[in-house]
Length: 417
Image 1 (cartoon, rainbow, N blue to C red):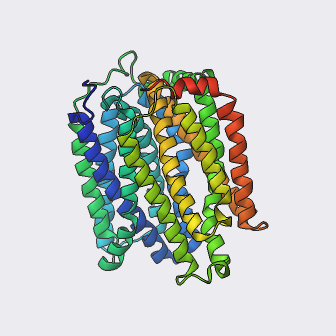
Image 2 (cartoon, rainbow, N blue to C red):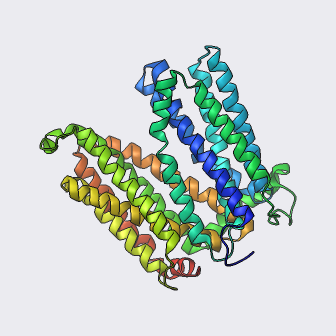
Image 3 (cartoon, rainbow, N blue to C red):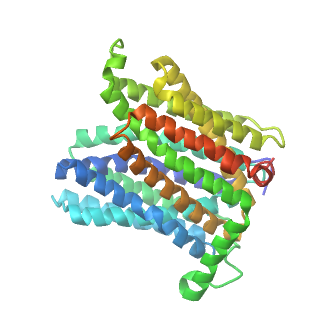
């Protein structure tokens, strides 16, 4: 590949396909939530639907890894997008006819969760092959920037839902987005080589078990990767405390009585500063080049600073809280870009899907457990106390995993130019 040119044909195609797919996903996720809430009128059923969509993330990424290290990831990606297009087109037709069934929609949520779990591992494992040598940092900065821009479409999903009076047209839009993305992905020219050494694992149970064990053994044998995964499992657990910020604003509105807007509105404003920080961080990551051999130090500083700011956030006045949120956004994108580009370049292509699958399962387990724990603790302790406890644990994890594994992690983070 041309080392001096990031925007090759394949990278341009995968980026355009991702933009189209993310835009449709942002619209439909909000519409689905509103659809379930409006038809059932039950907060519990709404939460249950959300849990069912995310539950496959605890299992399927790890199961998909061995298969995706033996089969064409490109084919899996565009095939799943075609399947998604068909599924949302079917939902469009059914809703237009006046159909609604919560149990079937719940089953559909699990189905889309499975598709999303497999798709994410296939995409993460295929994507580095489409980036010219030395361009992974910029490529992941672009991906982060596009993801944050897509997040801005969430409110648009609510606007369209209210304006159209139905989720059906939004499902049709998403079906079209998935179809267009699949067509783009199908045109990628890169020739995959990772599946050449053996027949696809999907055809042979014993080979799947062997490949699965090899993935576990690889992660256990790579101390740097293992320490990174364990750290992000703990931070995923601690990030569950972030969900307490909205309840804190609602239950402590008197603290912000001097402001001319409601406390919940202030929460939304502060949250938008985090998004603005992520956007600014994405642009910064695309434009700068880190000094050789300093990426680990920069990432370590970002981890420490994010945990300090997260623990102090609810004690700050609104202007400082907004500034802290902006800083967390910038630092989060910085550490994400360093970590992702380094680990994806470090892991061999033939083992990348297994590593990505294991990493997703480990971090998802931490995140779900953390959300449940934070919610339970908040019933008996103030939100501020829970936040301090959570980010203190995350800070301890910096020492336990990142600092203690610094030699191995430094070798991973600093190897990329």
